[in-house]
Image 1: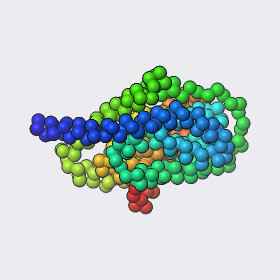
Image 2: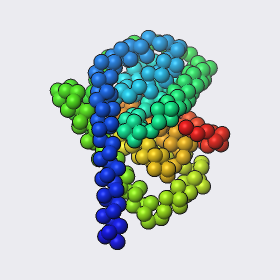
Image 3: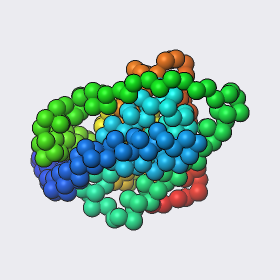
Image 4: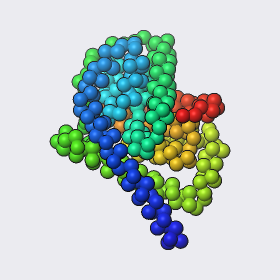
Length: 293
């Protein structure tokens, strides 16, 4: 028994160690983009008007910490539409992209996953805005002051500006490595106990339940959600449908900012319900259509 536990621990340490260089480089690039593009991206979405869902779904796919929080803040000030907000939430990749890069997933596969997220975000955002225009008149409200986005990232990205890009990238990499190690350790243990085929088959045999559960995991408002979903997919435990459901619903800290800054708890709950419903339905449809990435 102890020999098995030791083998599982060593395998997990080896698998985790192998991704450190690429993961660090990925977060180094993300830190650069975050500090040099976030303002321009926010301005672009702010000025997009009725094309908001189109612009939001595209820029939301770029790995920028806090952009979903920025969208929540802009929506709270009625600067962007609810459809644009939904589009950003659905296309936000959070920690998925650096993990896929560090695991040497083929570029074509990564682009297809991002493309699906953008497509779902675009279509859903346009549909939500169309429905909103049918049910109520659009009201212009005074622009409120922008929220301090980095304030809402403090629990995961504390003092990034003071630390510099290299130190911030290293800190973020270590946090995500810890999550990856924990998830991988649990998965490797389960595989050793029940077998990879049995574990994968358990989820595959429950296609709708898989999407429903993955969507709930995606609602966790921190990096854990996207890390868990991405790792489960890479290990072959879940398929494309549940993976996409979890990643589509995963809006990161955007949901925290929404409830903190936007008035109307019922409205916020409705937005979360719409986000969850779209993510789950999209995952189920992908499974029914046998879409692969």
